[in-house]
Length: 411
Image (cartoon, rainbow, N blue to C red):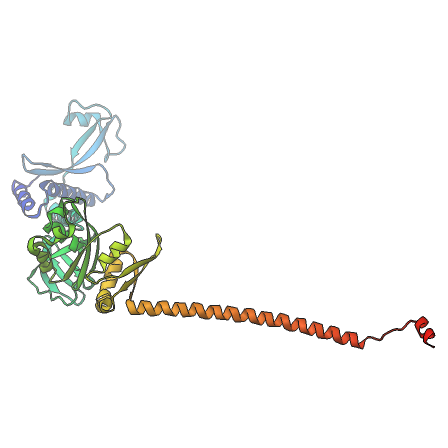
């Protein structure tokens, strides 16, 4: 046995407090390292009956081989005679298993070197598993981190036991991420790697808006108010469709809060991003009208309402067209993503012009159809006249035959 004292156990307990890696993991790693070192020493890496045992009371560790008690030994590495086994344990019988200490002399230095490598590897594996389990449970939630540094393609955010990556596509356009600042980020994904897990975070994801509203609006957390849909263009504008499961609770008012306190807090967290809160409706016409707010709507015509094709034609006053479409089409684009309806918007004058054009096209088509009928009639008439004329010509060309009897009588 190798004397190791109590220092190892004290170090393991301290490591458990600081790193969160249990003492049992370290002790197990030490035993595995010692067994691996012994297998390397005897040049038999495939030996299955070798193990290291730690005696915590005496502070000693040693290598043991498990052997089967037999009458006649054929393999000394796996078998032991009954007589030799009786020297170890008087109660042993044939076919029993006994553990024989095989720790080589001066094995401590070799064991220490091997143990260092194995323990270091096991600690890294344990740390990776702890981080993976922790952030897997936080996937899809908001956490607070500190900006570490910026690169050309990402922002590195420290989130506790590891650093997270915020790619450029998950950043708010135009936002300056200063190292040292605290930010709230959305855990988008956790990927397992050979080192520490790679955590991907976002400030542009639409679900970050949902998380903020759940934190600020008790009615949403309690399930009274429900967020039906979110459409977001990070840094610019978000549309949020809400529904109340309690008729006495105003879904929009609950999200805005007394004197707008709740919505102001969320807008501040999103760096003054504009937020439109609209009422969800199962009626597609009403839902589309709400989604296009703040524009006033004259009419909504449903052109197609199928599972894979939903189209609507919307008419707005002339002075509301730009507001309904929004800057660079943002308002109608967000309304489309919010409702999942394809929305075609026209002003009153455009709709009237389009209607007149359709009427003119119908009139032109009827004229063409009538003209084609007249031509057909003319052709029929011409054919009839030609047949009549031909018949007349044939009659003139025929010779009149006079019977001979009539001719003789005249003579």
